[in-house]
Length: 619
Image 1 (cartoon, rainbow, N blue to C red):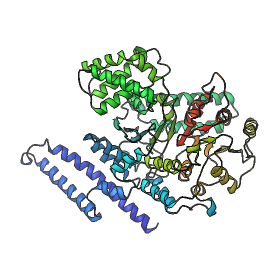
Image 2 (tube, helix red, strand yellow):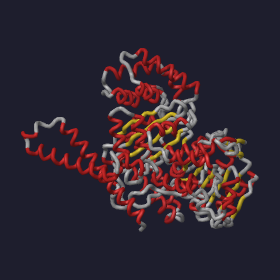
Image 3 (cartoon, rainbow, N blue to C red):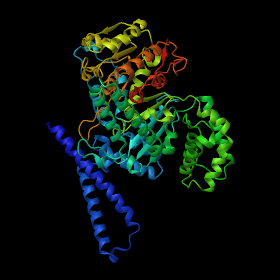
Image 4 (cartoon, one colour):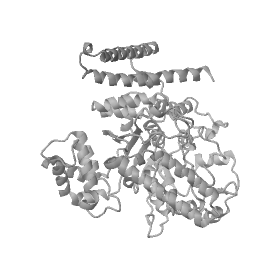
Protein backbone atom coordinates (compact mmCIF):
# COMPACT_ATOMS: atom_id res chain seq x y z
CA UNK A 1 0.00 0.00 0.00
CA UNK A 2 1.45 3.35 -1.03
CA UNK A 3 2.34 6.06 1.46
CA UNK A 4 -0.29 8.38 -0.07
CA UNK A 5 -3.08 5.82 0.43
CA UNK A 6 -1.97 5.09 4.00
CA UNK A 7 -1.89 8.81 4.80
CA UNK A 8 -5.31 9.37 3.23
CA UNK A 9 -6.84 6.50 5.21
CA UNK A 10 -5.28 7.75 8.45
CA UNK A 11 -6.54 11.29 7.96
CA UNK A 12 -9.99 9.99 6.96
CA UNK A 13 -10.18 7.90 10.14
CA UNK A 14 -9.13 10.90 12.24
CA UNK A 15 -11.78 13.02 10.57
CA UNK A 16 -14.42 10.38 11.13
CA UNK A 17 -13.55 10.16 14.82
CA UNK A 18 -13.53 13.96 15.07
CA UNK A 19 -16.95 14.08 13.45
CA UNK A 20 -18.36 11.62 16.00
CA UNK A 21 -16.77 13.57 18.86
CA UNK A 22 -18.16 16.80 17.46
CA UNK A 23 -21.63 15.29 17.27
CA UNK A 24 -21.58 14.12 20.88
CA UNK A 25 -20.08 17.42 21.97
CA UNK A 26 -23.02 19.26 20.42
CA UNK A 27 -25.36 16.98 22.40
CA UNK A 28 -23.48 17.87 25.59
CA UNK A 29 -23.75 21.57 24.81
CA UNK A 30 -27.50 21.19 24.36
CA UNK A 31 -27.79 19.38 27.69
CA UNK A 32 -25.81 22.07 29.56
CA UNK A 33 -28.58 24.62 29.02
CA UNK A 34 -30.94 22.65 31.28
CA UNK A 35 -28.42 21.40 33.87
CA UNK A 36 -28.53 22.68 37.49
CA UNK A 37 -25.41 24.37 38.89
CA UNK A 38 -22.47 21.93 38.80
CA UNK A 39 -21.83 22.08 42.55
CA UNK A 40 -25.26 20.51 43.16
CA UNK A 41 -24.43 17.31 41.33
CA UNK A 42 -21.02 15.63 41.02
CA UNK A 43 -22.16 13.85 37.86
CA UNK A 44 -22.74 17.21 36.16
CA UNK A 45 -19.21 18.27 37.08
CA UNK A 46 -17.90 15.08 35.47
CA UNK A 47 -19.95 15.74 32.31
CA UNK A 48 -18.64 19.27 32.07
CA UNK A 49 -15.03 18.17 32.46
CA UNK A 50 -15.44 15.38 29.90
CA UNK A 51 -17.08 17.75 27.41
CA UNK A 52 -14.26 20.25 27.90
CA UNK A 53 -11.72 17.48 27.32
CA UNK A 54 -13.47 16.36 24.14
CA UNK A 55 -13.64 19.94 22.89
CA UNK A 56 -9.98 20.48 23.70
CA UNK A 57 -9.00 17.25 21.92
CA UNK A 58 -11.02 18.16 18.84
CA UNK A 59 -9.47 21.63 18.73
CA UNK A 60 -5.98 20.16 19.09
CA UNK A 61 -6.53 17.68 16.22
CA UNK A 62 -7.88 20.44 13.97
CA UNK A 63 -5.04 22.80 14.89
CA UNK A 64 -2.49 20.16 13.88
CA UNK A 65 -4.23 19.98 10.50
CA UNK A 66 -4.29 23.76 10.14
CA UNK A 67 -8.09 23.99 10.06
CA UNK A 68 -10.77 25.65 12.16
CA UNK A 69 -13.51 22.99 11.72
CA UNK A 70 -14.09 19.42 10.64
CA UNK A 71 -16.18 20.66 7.70
CA UNK A 72 -13.25 22.73 6.43
CA UNK A 73 -11.04 19.62 6.37
CA UNK A 74 -13.73 17.55 4.68
CA UNK A 75 -14.09 20.12 1.89
CA UNK A 76 -10.42 19.67 0.97
CA UNK A 77 -10.25 15.89 1.40
CA UNK A 78 -13.67 14.40 0.56
CA UNK A 79 -13.96 10.63 0.98
CA UNK A 80 -16.53 7.96 1.80
CA UNK A 81 -15.53 8.25 5.49
CA UNK A 82 -15.80 12.03 5.72
CA UNK A 83 -19.21 12.43 4.08
CA UNK A 84 -20.92 11.91 7.44
CA UNK A 85 -19.42 15.23 8.54
CA UNK A 86 -21.32 16.95 5.71
CA UNK A 87 -24.55 15.23 6.73
CA UNK A 88 -24.05 16.30 10.36
CA UNK A 89 -23.38 19.88 9.22
CA UNK A 90 -26.52 19.80 7.06
CA UNK A 91 -28.55 18.67 10.06
CA UNK A 92 -27.41 21.69 12.06
CA UNK A 93 -28.07 24.06 9.14
CA UNK A 94 -31.56 22.65 8.68
CA UNK A 95 -32.36 23.09 12.37
CA UNK A 96 -31.41 26.75 12.00
CA UNK A 97 -33.65 27.15 8.95
CA UNK A 98 -30.82 27.64 6.44
CA UNK A 99 -32.01 25.36 3.64
CA UNK A 100 -29.52 26.51 1.00
CA UNK A 101 -26.63 25.76 3.36
CA UNK A 102 -28.18 22.40 4.26
CA UNK A 103 -28.56 21.42 0.60
CA UNK A 104 -24.98 22.48 -0.11
CA UNK A 105 -23.64 20.24 2.66
CA UNK A 106 -25.79 17.30 1.58
CA UNK A 107 -24.70 17.66 -2.04
CA UNK A 108 -21.06 17.33 -0.96
CA UNK A 109 -21.77 13.88 0.49
CA UNK A 110 -22.72 12.30 -2.86
CA UNK A 111 -20.38 10.26 -5.11
CA UNK A 112 -16.98 11.25 -3.75
CA UNK A 113 -15.30 8.26 -5.43
CA UNK A 114 -16.74 9.21 -8.82
CA UNK A 115 -15.51 12.79 -8.37
CA UNK A 116 -11.97 11.51 -7.72
CA UNK A 117 -12.11 9.32 -10.84
CA UNK A 118 -13.47 12.18 -12.94
CA UNK A 119 -10.74 14.48 -11.62
CA UNK A 120 -8.17 11.94 -12.82
CA UNK A 121 -9.81 12.03 -16.25
CA UNK A 122 -9.68 15.83 -16.37
CA UNK A 123 -6.02 15.91 -15.38
CA UNK A 124 -5.15 13.18 -17.86
CA UNK A 125 -7.82 13.31 -20.62
CA UNK A 126 -6.38 10.47 -22.72
CA UNK A 127 -6.16 7.98 -19.83
CA UNK A 128 -7.58 4.57 -20.65
CA UNK A 129 -7.12 4.78 -24.43
CA UNK A 130 -4.12 3.39 -26.25
CA UNK A 131 -4.98 5.42 -29.33
CA UNK A 132 -4.68 9.16 -28.85
CA UNK A 133 -7.27 9.72 -31.60
CA UNK A 134 -9.88 7.96 -29.44
CA UNK A 135 -9.50 10.26 -26.45
CA UNK A 136 -11.77 13.17 -25.77
CA UNK A 137 -10.67 16.39 -27.43
CA UNK A 138 -11.43 18.99 -24.74
CA UNK A 139 -10.41 22.61 -25.21
CA UNK A 140 -8.32 24.23 -22.44
CA UNK A 141 -11.20 26.60 -21.52
CA UNK A 142 -13.69 23.75 -21.26
CA UNK A 143 -11.22 21.74 -19.23
CA UNK A 144 -10.79 24.53 -16.69
CA UNK A 145 -14.57 25.03 -16.48
CA UNK A 146 -15.12 21.33 -15.80
CA UNK A 147 -12.37 21.24 -13.18
CA UNK A 148 -13.95 24.23 -11.43
CA UNK A 149 -17.39 22.56 -11.50
CA UNK A 150 -16.02 19.38 -9.97
CA UNK A 151 -14.07 21.29 -7.29
CA UNK A 152 -17.10 23.21 -5.99
CA UNK A 153 -16.85 23.61 -2.20
CA UNK A 154 -18.77 26.80 -1.32
CA UNK A 155 -22.52 27.32 -1.00
CA UNK A 156 -22.65 30.12 -3.59
CA UNK A 157 -20.78 27.88 -6.04
CA UNK A 158 -23.35 25.13 -5.50
CA UNK A 159 -26.19 27.56 -6.20
CA UNK A 160 -24.43 28.69 -9.36
CA UNK A 161 -24.47 25.07 -10.59
CA UNK A 162 -28.27 25.09 -10.39
CA UNK A 163 -28.36 28.37 -12.31
CA UNK A 164 -26.48 26.79 -15.22
CA UNK A 165 -29.12 24.07 -15.75
CA UNK A 166 -32.39 24.38 -17.75
CA UNK A 167 -35.22 26.05 -15.83
CA UNK A 168 -37.70 23.23 -16.53
CA UNK A 169 -35.53 20.60 -14.80
CA UNK A 170 -36.15 19.58 -11.18
CA UNK A 171 -33.32 18.09 -9.11
CA UNK A 172 -34.55 15.67 -6.44
CA UNK A 173 -31.64 14.73 -4.18
CA UNK A 174 -32.32 11.97 -1.63
CA UNK A 175 -29.71 11.53 1.10
CA UNK A 176 -29.69 9.01 3.95
CA UNK A 177 -29.36 10.26 7.50
CA UNK A 178 -26.49 9.05 9.72
CA UNK A 179 -24.92 6.70 7.18
CA UNK A 180 -21.67 6.64 9.11
CA UNK A 181 -23.17 4.68 12.03
CA UNK A 182 -23.15 1.58 9.81
CA UNK A 183 -19.92 2.16 7.88
CA UNK A 184 -18.10 -0.66 9.71
CA UNK A 185 -20.94 -3.19 9.71
CA UNK A 186 -20.20 -6.81 8.88
CA UNK A 187 -19.98 -7.45 5.12
CA UNK A 188 -23.17 -9.07 3.87
CA UNK A 189 -25.41 -7.31 6.39
CA UNK A 190 -27.63 -4.33 5.67
CA UNK A 191 -28.43 -1.29 7.81
CA UNK A 192 -32.05 -0.63 8.77
CA UNK A 193 -34.18 1.56 6.51
CA UNK A 194 -32.73 5.06 7.13
CA UNK A 195 -34.32 8.41 7.65
CA UNK A 196 -33.96 10.67 4.62
CA UNK A 197 -33.28 14.24 3.60
CA UNK A 198 -35.24 15.04 0.44
CA UNK A 199 -33.87 18.13 -1.33
CA UNK A 200 -36.08 19.53 -4.07
CA UNK A 201 -34.42 22.11 -6.32
CA UNK A 202 -35.72 24.07 -9.27
CA UNK A 203 -33.07 25.17 -11.77
CA UNK A 204 -32.49 28.26 -13.89
CA UNK A 205 -31.61 31.86 -13.13
CA UNK A 206 -33.62 31.93 -9.87
CA UNK A 207 -33.34 28.47 -8.32
CA UNK A 208 -35.43 27.48 -5.32
CA UNK A 209 -34.42 24.89 -2.73
CA UNK A 210 -36.55 22.97 -0.24
CA UNK A 211 -35.03 20.40 2.14
CA UNK A 212 -37.34 18.12 4.11
CA UNK A 213 -36.32 15.57 6.74
CA UNK A 214 -38.23 12.27 6.52
CA UNK A 215 -38.14 9.91 9.51
CA UNK A 216 -37.34 6.21 9.14
CA UNK A 217 -40.27 3.74 9.21
CA UNK A 218 -41.13 2.78 12.78
CA UNK A 219 -42.81 -0.54 12.04
CA UNK A 220 -40.40 -3.46 12.61
CA UNK A 221 -41.55 -5.17 9.41
CA UNK A 222 -40.34 -2.18 7.38
CA UNK A 223 -36.92 -1.86 8.94
CA UNK A 224 -35.13 -3.57 6.06
CA UNK A 225 -36.43 -2.27 2.73
CA UNK A 226 -32.98 -2.32 1.11
CA UNK A 227 -32.32 -5.80 2.47
CA UNK A 228 -35.64 -7.09 1.12
CA UNK A 229 -34.82 -5.78 -2.38
CA UNK A 230 -31.41 -7.49 -2.25
CA UNK A 231 -33.04 -10.77 -1.17
CA UNK A 232 -35.53 -10.52 -4.04
CA UNK A 233 -32.67 -9.97 -6.49
CA UNK A 234 -30.75 -12.99 -5.18
CA UNK A 235 -33.82 -15.25 -5.32
CA UNK A 236 -34.49 -13.98 -8.83
CA UNK A 237 -31.04 -15.27 -9.87
CA UNK A 238 -31.73 -18.66 -8.29
CA UNK A 239 -35.08 -19.00 -10.07
CA UNK A 240 -33.58 -18.16 -13.46
CA UNK A 241 -30.88 -20.78 -12.88
CA UNK A 242 -32.70 -23.66 -11.16
CA UNK A 243 -36.29 -23.56 -12.42
CA UNK A 244 -36.03 -22.78 -16.13
CA UNK A 245 -36.97 -26.37 -17.06
CA UNK A 246 -39.87 -26.53 -14.57
CA UNK A 247 -42.34 -24.05 -16.01
CA UNK A 248 -45.06 -24.35 -13.37
CA UNK A 249 -42.66 -23.80 -10.46
CA UNK A 250 -40.82 -21.12 -12.43
CA UNK A 251 -43.92 -19.00 -13.05
CA UNK A 252 -45.18 -19.52 -9.49
CA UNK A 253 -41.87 -18.40 -7.98
CA UNK A 254 -41.59 -15.39 -10.28
CA UNK A 255 -45.12 -14.30 -9.43
CA UNK A 256 -44.22 -14.48 -5.73
CA UNK A 257 -41.20 -12.25 -6.31
CA UNK A 258 -43.34 -9.86 -8.37
CA UNK A 259 -45.75 -9.47 -5.48
CA UNK A 260 -42.96 -9.05 -2.95
CA UNK A 261 -41.38 -6.26 -5.02
CA UNK A 262 -44.76 -4.56 -5.41
CA UNK A 263 -45.11 -4.67 -1.61
CA UNK A 264 -41.66 -3.08 -1.24
CA UNK A 265 -42.59 -0.21 -3.57
CA UNK A 266 -45.91 0.22 -1.75
CA UNK A 267 -44.04 0.34 1.57
CA UNK A 268 -41.72 3.00 0.17
CA UNK A 269 -44.76 5.09 -0.77
CA UNK A 270 -46.98 4.64 2.28
CA UNK A 271 -44.73 3.86 5.25
CA UNK A 272 -41.45 5.57 4.32
CA UNK A 273 -42.03 8.64 2.13
CA UNK A 274 -45.68 8.95 3.20
CA UNK A 275 -47.14 12.38 2.36
CA UNK A 276 -43.72 13.65 1.26
CA UNK A 277 -44.05 11.71 -2.02
CA UNK A 278 -45.27 15.03 -3.42
CA UNK A 279 -41.68 16.37 -3.31
CA UNK A 280 -40.58 13.92 -6.01
CA UNK A 281 -42.74 15.30 -8.82
CA UNK A 282 -41.42 17.32 -11.76
CA UNK A 283 -42.45 20.89 -12.46
CA UNK A 284 -45.47 21.76 -14.59
CA UNK A 285 -45.37 23.46 -17.98
CA UNK A 286 -45.41 27.27 -18.03
CA UNK A 287 -49.20 27.64 -18.51
CA UNK A 288 -50.11 25.02 -15.89
CA UNK A 289 -47.57 26.44 -13.46
CA UNK A 290 -49.21 29.85 -13.80
CA UNK A 291 -52.62 28.32 -13.06
CA UNK A 292 -51.17 26.55 -10.00
CA UNK A 293 -49.65 29.77 -8.67
CA UNK A 294 -52.95 31.59 -9.16
CA UNK A 295 -54.86 28.85 -7.30
CA UNK A 296 -52.28 28.90 -4.49
CA UNK A 297 -52.57 32.70 -4.24
CA UNK A 298 -56.37 32.42 -3.86
CA UNK A 299 -56.02 29.79 -1.14
CA UNK A 300 -53.50 31.88 0.81
CA UNK A 301 -55.57 35.06 0.38
CA UNK A 302 -58.59 33.37 2.01
CA UNK A 303 -56.44 31.77 4.70
CA UNK A 304 -56.68 33.36 8.16
CA UNK A 305 -52.99 32.83 8.95
CA UNK A 306 -49.81 33.63 6.96
CA UNK A 307 -47.53 31.09 5.28
CA UNK A 308 -43.81 31.46 4.78
CA UNK A 309 -42.21 31.32 1.32
CA UNK A 310 -41.04 27.76 1.96
CA UNK A 311 -44.50 26.71 3.15
CA UNK A 312 -46.01 28.22 0.00
CA UNK A 313 -43.65 26.19 -2.22
CA UNK A 314 -44.49 23.03 -0.30
CA UNK A 315 -48.20 23.79 -0.55
CA UNK A 316 -47.92 23.96 -4.35
CA UNK A 317 -46.30 20.50 -4.38
CA UNK A 318 -48.98 19.10 -2.08
CA UNK A 319 -52.07 20.35 -3.91
CA UNK A 320 -50.80 19.45 -7.42
CA UNK A 321 -49.34 16.03 -6.58
CA UNK A 322 -50.48 13.29 -9.04
CA UNK A 323 -53.05 10.81 -7.73
CA UNK A 324 -52.46 7.04 -8.07
CA UNK A 325 -54.59 5.34 -10.77
CA UNK A 326 -56.54 3.42 -8.12
CA UNK A 327 -57.55 6.70 -6.48
CA UNK A 328 -59.38 8.56 -9.21
CA UNK A 329 -62.73 8.94 -7.48
CA UNK A 330 -62.31 12.58 -6.51
CA UNK A 331 -60.97 14.42 -3.48
CA UNK A 332 -62.92 12.45 -0.89
CA UNK A 333 -61.72 9.02 -2.08
CA UNK A 334 -58.36 9.80 -3.59
CA UNK A 335 -56.69 12.71 -1.86
CA UNK A 336 -58.37 13.49 1.45
CA UNK A 337 -56.22 11.38 3.79
CA UNK A 338 -52.81 12.15 2.29
CA UNK A 339 -53.81 15.78 1.76
CA UNK A 340 -54.69 16.30 5.40
CA UNK A 341 -51.51 14.58 6.57
CA UNK A 342 -49.42 16.74 4.21
CA UNK A 343 -51.09 19.96 5.35
CA UNK A 344 -50.66 18.97 8.99
CA UNK A 345 -46.94 18.37 8.41
CA UNK A 346 -46.72 21.69 6.57
CA UNK A 347 -48.21 23.57 9.53
CA UNK A 348 -46.51 21.41 12.22
CA UNK A 349 -49.91 20.63 13.73
CA UNK A 350 -52.25 17.70 14.35
CA UNK A 351 -54.46 16.48 11.49
CA UNK A 352 -57.44 17.32 13.72
CA UNK A 353 -56.46 20.95 14.31
CA UNK A 354 -58.78 23.74 13.19
CA UNK A 355 -56.13 25.38 10.99
CA UNK A 356 -55.52 22.14 9.10
CA UNK A 357 -59.26 21.68 8.52
CA UNK A 358 -59.65 25.28 7.34
CA UNK A 359 -56.76 25.03 4.88
CA UNK A 360 -58.03 21.69 3.50
CA UNK A 361 -61.48 23.25 3.00
CA UNK A 362 -59.93 26.10 0.98
CA UNK A 363 -57.98 23.57 -1.13
CA UNK A 364 -61.16 21.63 -1.83
CA UNK A 365 -62.75 24.74 -3.34
CA UNK A 366 -60.06 24.64 -6.06
CA UNK A 367 -60.54 20.93 -6.73
CA UNK A 368 -61.84 21.42 -10.29
CA UNK A 369 -58.64 23.08 -11.45
CA UNK A 370 -56.31 21.04 -9.22
CA UNK A 371 -57.72 17.78 -10.58
CA UNK A 372 -56.60 18.81 -14.07
CA UNK A 373 -53.15 19.84 -12.88
CA UNK A 374 -52.63 16.48 -11.14
CA UNK A 375 -53.13 14.72 -14.48
CA UNK A 376 -50.92 17.12 -16.47
CA UNK A 377 -47.62 16.04 -18.02
CA UNK A 378 -44.53 16.97 -16.02
CA UNK A 379 -41.09 18.30 -16.92
CA UNK A 380 -37.95 16.17 -16.37
CA UNK A 381 -36.89 14.99 -12.93
CA UNK A 382 -33.24 14.17 -12.22
CA UNK A 383 -32.87 11.86 -9.20
CA UNK A 384 -29.62 12.15 -7.24
CA UNK A 385 -29.60 9.14 -4.92
CA UNK A 386 -27.46 8.34 -1.91
CA UNK A 387 -25.20 5.29 -2.19
CA UNK A 388 -27.19 3.31 0.39
CA UNK A 389 -30.53 3.60 -1.47
CA UNK A 390 -29.42 3.67 -5.12
CA UNK A 391 -30.41 0.02 -5.65
CA UNK A 392 -34.12 0.68 -4.99
CA UNK A 393 -36.69 1.04 -7.83
CA UNK A 394 -37.63 4.67 -7.15
CA UNK A 395 -39.09 5.16 -10.63
CA UNK A 396 -41.94 2.74 -9.75
CA UNK A 397 -43.35 5.07 -7.07
CA UNK A 398 -46.72 6.24 -8.30
CA UNK A 399 -45.87 9.95 -8.54
CA UNK A 400 -43.06 9.09 -10.98
CA UNK A 401 -44.59 6.27 -13.03
CA UNK A 402 -45.59 8.32 -16.07
CA UNK A 403 -42.95 11.02 -15.73
CA UNK A 404 -39.60 11.61 -17.51
CA UNK A 405 -37.07 10.56 -14.84
CA UNK A 406 -33.30 10.13 -15.13
CA UNK A 407 -30.68 9.42 -12.50
CA UNK A 408 -27.35 11.13 -11.90
CA UNK A 409 -24.77 10.41 -9.17
CA UNK A 410 -24.38 14.04 -8.06
CA UNK A 411 -25.25 17.64 -8.89
CA UNK A 412 -21.64 18.32 -9.86
CA UNK A 413 -21.51 15.48 -12.39
CA UNK A 414 -24.90 16.54 -13.77
CA UNK A 415 -23.74 20.14 -14.32
CA UNK A 416 -20.39 19.02 -15.76
CA UNK A 417 -22.10 16.66 -18.23
CA UNK A 418 -24.66 19.30 -19.23
CA UNK A 419 -21.97 21.95 -19.78
CA UNK A 420 -19.91 19.52 -21.86
CA UNK A 421 -22.80 18.80 -24.26
CA UNK A 422 -24.73 22.07 -24.29
CA UNK A 423 -21.77 24.06 -25.65
CA UNK A 424 -21.21 21.61 -28.54
CA UNK A 425 -23.48 22.21 -31.53
CA UNK A 426 -22.93 18.64 -32.76
CA UNK A 427 -24.04 17.02 -29.48
CA UNK A 428 -27.23 14.93 -29.41
CA UNK A 429 -28.36 17.12 -26.49
CA UNK A 430 -28.43 20.11 -28.86
CA UNK A 431 -29.35 18.44 -32.15
CA UNK A 432 -31.52 15.63 -30.82
CA UNK A 433 -31.00 11.93 -31.49
CA UNK A 434 -31.24 11.05 -35.17
CA UNK A 435 -32.97 7.65 -35.06
CA UNK A 436 -31.46 6.70 -38.44
CA UNK A 437 -27.92 6.89 -37.03
CA UNK A 438 -27.56 3.82 -34.86
CA UNK A 439 -25.55 0.68 -34.31
CA UNK A 440 -26.55 -2.63 -32.71
CA UNK A 441 -24.65 -5.46 -31.08
CA UNK A 442 -26.82 -8.61 -30.95
CA UNK A 443 -25.79 -11.70 -28.96
CA UNK A 444 -22.04 -11.35 -29.57
CA UNK A 445 -21.33 -14.60 -27.66
CA UNK A 446 -23.73 -16.46 -29.96
CA UNK A 447 -25.45 -18.36 -27.14
CA UNK A 448 -28.88 -16.68 -27.16
CA UNK A 449 -30.48 -18.15 -30.31
CA UNK A 450 -34.03 -17.21 -29.31
CA UNK A 451 -32.98 -13.60 -28.71
CA UNK A 452 -31.41 -13.53 -32.17
CA UNK A 453 -34.61 -14.92 -33.65
CA UNK A 454 -36.85 -12.37 -31.92
CA UNK A 455 -34.72 -9.28 -32.56
CA UNK A 456 -33.04 -9.81 -35.93
CA UNK A 457 -36.01 -8.57 -37.98
CA UNK A 458 -36.48 -5.53 -35.69
CA UNK A 459 -32.87 -4.46 -36.14
CA UNK A 460 -33.09 -5.10 -39.88
CA UNK A 461 -36.00 -2.63 -40.07
CA UNK A 462 -33.85 0.14 -38.59
CA UNK A 463 -31.34 0.08 -41.43
CA UNK A 464 -28.50 0.39 -38.92
CA UNK A 465 -25.14 -1.33 -39.28
CA UNK A 466 -24.52 -3.91 -36.60
CA UNK A 467 -22.88 -7.13 -35.43
CA UNK A 468 -24.71 -10.40 -34.73
CA UNK A 469 -23.26 -13.56 -33.15
CA UNK A 470 -19.68 -12.23 -33.25
CA UNK A 471 -17.51 -10.55 -30.65
CA UNK A 472 -16.69 -6.95 -31.69
CA UNK A 473 -13.19 -5.59 -31.69
CA UNK A 474 -12.33 -2.69 -29.39
CA UNK A 475 -12.23 -0.37 -32.40
CA UNK A 476 -15.70 -1.42 -33.58
CA UNK A 477 -17.19 -0.89 -30.12
CA UNK A 478 -15.45 2.47 -29.67
CA UNK A 479 -16.53 3.69 -33.08
CA UNK A 480 -20.17 2.79 -32.34
CA UNK A 481 -20.42 4.78 -29.10
CA UNK A 482 -18.34 7.77 -30.24
CA UNK A 483 -19.71 8.33 -33.78
CA UNK A 484 -23.32 7.10 -33.77
CA UNK A 485 -26.37 8.76 -32.20
CA UNK A 486 -27.64 5.51 -30.71
CA UNK A 487 -25.98 2.26 -29.61
CA UNK A 488 -28.09 -0.77 -28.62
CA UNK A 489 -26.60 -3.83 -26.94
CA UNK A 490 -28.64 -7.05 -26.55
CA UNK A 491 -26.60 -9.74 -24.82
CA UNK A 492 -25.24 -10.82 -21.45
CA UNK A 493 -24.39 -8.21 -18.82
CA UNK A 494 -23.32 -4.67 -19.69
CA UNK A 495 -21.02 -5.43 -22.63
CA UNK A 496 -17.92 -4.55 -20.59
CA UNK A 497 -16.49 -7.95 -21.53
CA UNK A 498 -16.03 -6.53 -25.06
CA UNK A 499 -14.88 -3.02 -24.08
CA UNK A 500 -13.79 -2.74 -20.42
CA UNK A 501 -15.00 0.25 -18.44
CA UNK A 502 -11.45 1.51 -17.96
CA UNK A 503 -11.13 1.89 -21.75
CA UNK A 504 -14.57 3.50 -22.02
CA UNK A 505 -13.46 6.24 -19.59
CA UNK A 506 -10.87 7.60 -22.01
CA UNK A 507 -13.40 8.20 -24.82
CA UNK A 508 -15.73 11.06 -25.71
CA UNK A 509 -19.00 9.18 -25.98
CA UNK A 510 -21.63 10.70 -28.28
CA UNK A 511 -24.36 8.04 -28.42
CA UNK A 512 -27.43 7.28 -26.38
CA UNK A 513 -26.29 3.90 -25.00
CA UNK A 514 -28.99 1.26 -24.43
CA UNK A 515 -27.77 -1.86 -22.58
CA UNK A 516 -30.42 -4.60 -22.54
CA UNK A 517 -28.35 -7.01 -20.45
CA UNK A 518 -28.71 -8.28 -16.89
CA UNK A 519 -27.71 -5.75 -14.21
CA UNK A 520 -26.16 -3.54 -16.90
CA UNK A 521 -26.44 -0.31 -14.86
CA UNK A 522 -26.18 -1.85 -11.41
CA UNK A 523 -23.98 -0.04 -8.89
CA UNK A 524 -22.42 -2.71 -6.68
CA UNK A 525 -20.74 -1.99 -3.32
CA UNK A 526 -16.99 -2.56 -3.06
CA UNK A 527 -16.26 -3.31 0.55
CA UNK A 528 -17.88 -1.67 3.55
CA UNK A 529 -17.23 2.01 3.00
CA UNK A 530 -16.47 3.05 -0.56
CA UNK A 531 -19.17 4.22 -2.96
CA UNK A 532 -20.75 1.50 -5.14
CA UNK A 533 -19.42 1.23 -8.68
CA UNK A 534 -20.65 0.04 -12.06
CA UNK A 535 -20.03 0.35 -15.80
CA UNK A 536 -22.60 3.15 -16.07
CA UNK A 537 -20.20 5.41 -14.13
CA UNK A 538 -17.44 4.62 -16.63
CA UNK A 539 -19.79 5.84 -19.37
CA UNK A 540 -20.58 9.05 -17.47
CA UNK A 541 -16.85 9.72 -17.06
CA UNK A 542 -16.66 9.32 -20.85
CA UNK A 543 -19.30 12.10 -21.17
CA UNK A 544 -21.98 9.66 -22.36
CA UNK A 545 -25.14 11.84 -22.50
CA UNK A 546 -27.54 9.05 -21.52
CA UNK A 547 -27.45 5.34 -20.59
CA UNK A 548 -30.52 3.08 -20.43
CA UNK A 549 -30.18 -0.28 -18.69
CA UNK A 550 -31.22 -2.75 -16.01
CA UNK A 551 -30.68 -2.54 -12.24
CA UNK A 552 -30.68 -6.34 -11.79
CA UNK A 553 -30.99 -9.65 -13.65
CA UNK A 554 -33.90 -9.96 -16.09
CA UNK A 555 -35.35 -12.73 -18.27
CA UNK A 556 -34.46 -12.82 -21.97
CA UNK A 557 -38.00 -13.32 -23.34
CA UNK A 558 -39.51 -10.39 -21.42
CA UNK A 559 -36.51 -8.18 -22.19
CA UNK A 560 -36.62 -9.08 -25.90
CA UNK A 561 -40.28 -8.09 -26.08
CA UNK A 562 -39.41 -4.80 -24.34
CA UNK A 563 -36.51 -4.27 -26.75
CA UNK A 564 -38.73 -4.74 -29.80
CA UNK A 565 -41.27 -2.19 -28.52
CA UNK A 566 -38.65 0.39 -27.52
CA UNK A 567 -36.64 0.14 -30.75
CA UNK A 568 -39.79 0.70 -32.81
CA UNK A 569 -40.78 3.60 -30.53
CA UNK A 570 -37.32 5.18 -30.86
CA UNK A 571 -37.82 4.93 -34.64
CA UNK A 572 -41.07 6.89 -34.25
CA UNK A 573 -43.32 3.94 -35.18
CA UNK A 574 -46.73 3.83 -33.52
CA UNK A 575 -47.29 0.93 -31.15
CA UNK A 576 -50.35 -1.06 -30.13
CA UNK A 577 -53.29 1.37 -29.68
CA UNK A 578 -54.02 -0.24 -26.32
CA UNK A 579 -50.58 0.63 -24.89
CA UNK A 580 -48.99 3.91 -23.67
CA UNK A 581 -46.69 3.68 -26.72
CA UNK A 582 -49.56 4.00 -29.21
CA UNK A 583 -48.03 7.40 -30.05
CA UNK A 584 -44.39 7.30 -28.89
CA UNK A 585 -43.11 10.45 -27.14
CA UNK A 586 -39.90 12.05 -28.39
CA UNK A 587 -38.59 12.41 -24.82
CA UNK A 588 -36.29 9.42 -24.15
CA UNK A 589 -36.93 9.29 -20.39
CA UNK A 590 -40.71 9.48 -20.89
CA UNK A 591 -40.50 6.82 -23.61
CA UNK A 592 -38.66 4.54 -21.19
CA UNK A 593 -41.27 5.19 -18.47
CA UNK A 594 -44.09 4.19 -20.82
CA UNK A 595 -42.15 1.20 -22.17
CA UNK A 596 -42.39 -0.44 -18.74
CA UNK A 597 -46.00 -1.29 -19.58
CA UNK A 598 -44.69 -3.68 -22.29
CA UNK A 599 -43.13 -5.98 -19.68
CA UNK A 600 -45.00 -9.04 -18.52
CA UNK A 601 -43.11 -9.18 -15.24
CA UNK A 602 -43.06 -6.36 -12.70
CA UNK A 603 -39.46 -7.40 -11.91
CA UNK A 604 -38.40 -6.50 -15.45
CA UNK A 605 -40.32 -3.23 -15.54
CA UNK A 606 -38.86 -2.08 -12.21
CA UNK A 607 -35.29 -2.87 -13.34
CA UNK A 608 -35.44 -0.55 -16.37
CA UNK A 609 -33.65 2.72 -15.53
CA UNK A 610 -32.20 5.82 -17.23
CA UNK A 611 -28.94 7.56 -16.25
CA UNK A 612 -27.83 10.89 -17.68
CA UNK A 613 -29.39 13.90 -19.40
CA UNK A 614 -32.98 14.24 -20.68
CA UNK A 615 -32.73 13.79 -24.46
CA UNK A 616 -35.10 14.11 -27.43
CA UNK A 617 -35.41 11.82 -30.46
CA UNK A 618 -35.77 13.24 -33.98
CA UNK A 619 -37.50 11.00 -36.52
